[in-house]
Length: 255
Image 1: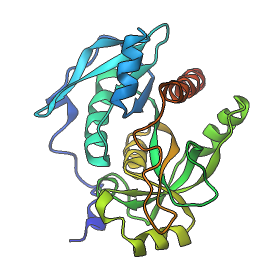
Image 2: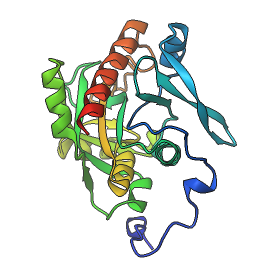
Image 3: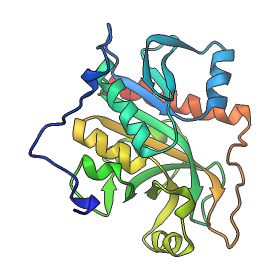
Image 4: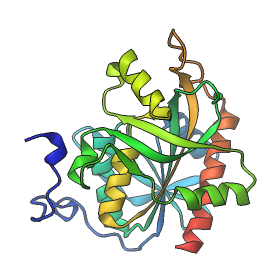
């Protein structure tokens, strides 16, 4: 059976988040998800976040779920990649009854017109992952359902952005020249490792999903350029977090 035939809509999951997690004492509607441990350390040093009483755990360790101070918005730092991110998010959604997810992180640039640190709103994601095929019917691309609303919020906040298709992959070191060229021909402007997977999860669970990404390394030239990957200054990291928080607060009041 092909991976694209993995979606089973006729039977229930055998393992559920409730097998591992207890419900929280309080529900939260909106969760911000991101990746950078450098950002996490900055926010902790500045006293901007505090851990809740809940962690999500695995053999790799325990992962705190934070509350952004003076808000009802949760914050979670996930690992890179769709499979682990989706597994952890299923548990957090169950624990807190999450209805909205704002996610941000870096991406590889495929389009010469996109600059490093440009903010990108994905509209569709190419499903070069495995996880998404277990949550929704097969297709080459998955639509980012809330991208129009997110564009409206960016415009309301007067934040410059680029919109376009992205390429979600599970295999960073198999982004071959031929595959890069195929995705570029189809209109993909960036490559990342989670968006199609998380969109499929959110579609399956009827969760509102609002991802944005920023250009970091470049895959649009003859020679790979790591550029800003892992090298963002602290003020830029905080700027992205501030944008995500403003978006989350607006969404939390809308949905």
